[in-house]
Length: 205
Image 1 (cartoon, rainbow, N blue to C red):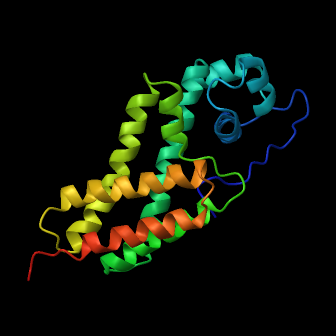
Image 2 (spheres, helix red, strand yellow):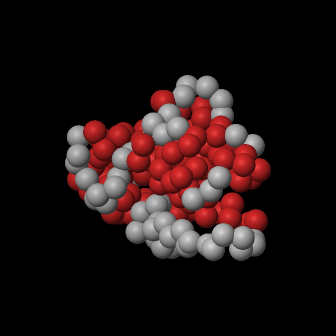
């Protein structure tokens, strides 16, 4: 299972009172799929409201604007993806090689999904190289790099910060190539093959 789940919006009879938190969560989840499939500017506000099953007034009440909805979608997506990779790494126990292998294994599963279209945060920052997309992409990559730096430090490399950056370059390169070159799982496998030797330089020889 990749970082996108299945969206299920339940119809509600007119005049029925809804829990505001549930309404916001359903709108956010539906908008996540729409923006990922169509891009931030590939859908207008009227179509967006129709897609998420809400009136324009409801959308504005919960998010303030389309940009407010975009920011909420990107933050939720980043939080979910970072937690997803950390859970994967945790399955490797205390072994940094196993941790890194697990990270690239779940990435490979994601890359093979038919709806895979690359990293939503970087896609957003490419479409809108200004706020809030830019800073949220930076924050998102910082989260990935923090995890990879922790793995590098656990492996005993002499410069874990640098190795963490290098691992992030391989991870993001695989993310792009899996999308644009349609490599699927092979992109993750190739990136892992290049990444593992970086953990072998412990500086203890």
